[in-house]
Length: 460
Image (cartoon, rainbow, N blue to C red; front, side):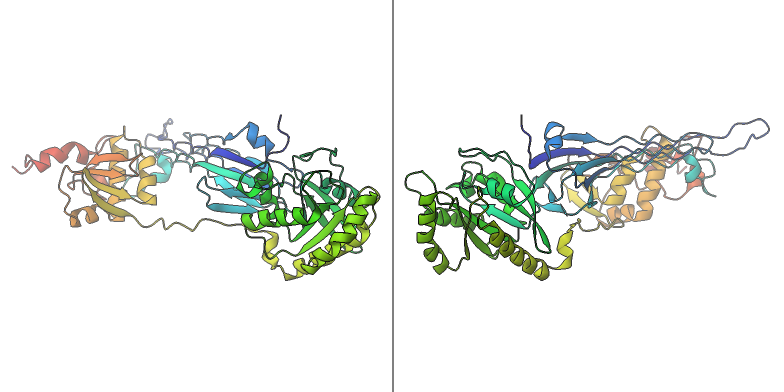
């Protein structure tokens, strides 16, 4: 079973808002008590929050579907429905929230960083809230809005100051264990490390984190082996340390070739050219390895890399290496802008007041945040509610825009996207704002009379 997961697809759904209530007060001695229907409660949000105690996305690998609760409907007696609780998803620091197409929505770094993945729907208004001097006793209420349904990709990019890179079994995990209190599983065979290991290192007054990046082999940046799965963890590290195995028994390998191969993979992955590098020649406790380290050190230094000879087994050279890493970490922290400690990207705000009308082969399509939301809130089994929707659309200017574009009575008007639109047969004879034309409760005489009026039956 997997114990570490750093990339999952999450299917999130906000809770639906509760429906408003259409109720009229009926009590003894109060024959005209008036409307008293309460509002529906808000649906719950699905929220991602950084928790320092969480280190993997494993929980969402096993449970990728998350739905918040629905708001409760309103009731008579001016009783509003209860709001649903939010669903809080605890994620590790360094989690990136993106669309399936790759657009970054949020970059969550630091304890408490928050992003709302799917918002809950607003509750519908009850008829008490819809009452006005012109509509004293509405016989309808608004429906609750459905919650957002959203598929996002959660990707973990380890937050560490220093990344140890190198071939499998180069001793990266052993170096982390020797320099910190971390205790990764270590054995003498390739691909021992299947997850990034993090350790906290103290060098004088500087405290920083070190992570080993497993699985780097030739072709890792193109998907070979495990390297591509973990190269993303290098992106947040400000310092790179090449750990080179000077005691390898593999034929055809030596520290210089290993350095060239790993640098080529980092260059192919991209975005890491500006990171300062150090080179650690590991396993010098082995006599032949010490001799090899002395031979290759001048060659590597000629390329501009500071070189340190170390042994994770005996801890030789680790103190000097730790202070060298600390010096580079301090420089990187001083050069980094303050806002990099926590980055949150939010989608651009939406202008709710606007709408668009486009002509199509089957009629006219209306798009806009307000008209689409109003349609979702309308109970189409209630004529009075439909008349109220017509009033709102006319006040917004939809009817005027349709007339200007040449729409004729009876033409199809579609409100919403192609996959989920509500279609009307449009009749401009429905006069907006004339609430005095309402008939019995739940009806609107404008809707019943429109066809007769259009045919001239009312002109006698």
